[in-house]
Image (cartoon, rainbow, N blue to C red; front, side, top):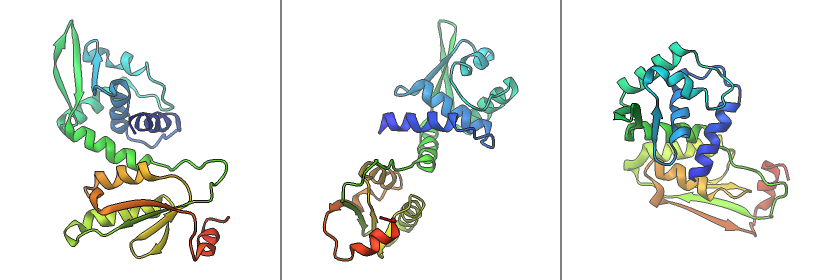
Length: 199
C-alpha cells in the first residue's frame, strides 16, 4: 500500500487541482519527500521554497504560501520541528499529520480497472456493532463513492480487485475486523450486477 499511497499523492500534485489548499499541498509534498521515514530535511526553513521546488506539482506555491502553510501545519500539530543537524532543520509529520494524510489518501482513492474483466465478483460484507455507527456509515459512504453495488443491506459488490483498498478504508475507521472481502464466480442474480456495471 505504501507505494500506491505515494503514487496517489503524486497524481494529486500532477492533476491541476488549482482549488486545493496550499496547506494540503505542502503536507503532501512533505509526505512524498519523506516516505517511508516521514522526515523532511530543509536547508533552513528560510530556504524551504527551494526544497519544495524539487517536487513536481501543477500548482506553484509562492514563498508566502509555503511559509504560511508550514506555520499552519505546525500550529495544528500536523508537523513538528525535531531539531537541527549539520545546519539543516528536520521536519517530521506527527501521528496526527499521518492520520490527516491517510484520510486524504482515502479521498483520492480510486480502484484501477483492468482492460478486461476476469468474470469474478468481489463481495464486501460486514456486520458492524452499533457502537461503531460512525465507522459503518463512513465505510458505506466510501463504498458508494467508489461505485460499489449494494447487493443486500450489508453486502456490496464490485467487479474488479479491491481487497487492499477496502481493508485500508475499514482499518482506518477501526472496523476492519468486522469486514470480509471474498470473490465469487457464480452469482444467482448476476444479471442485476451486469446491468449495473454495464457489462
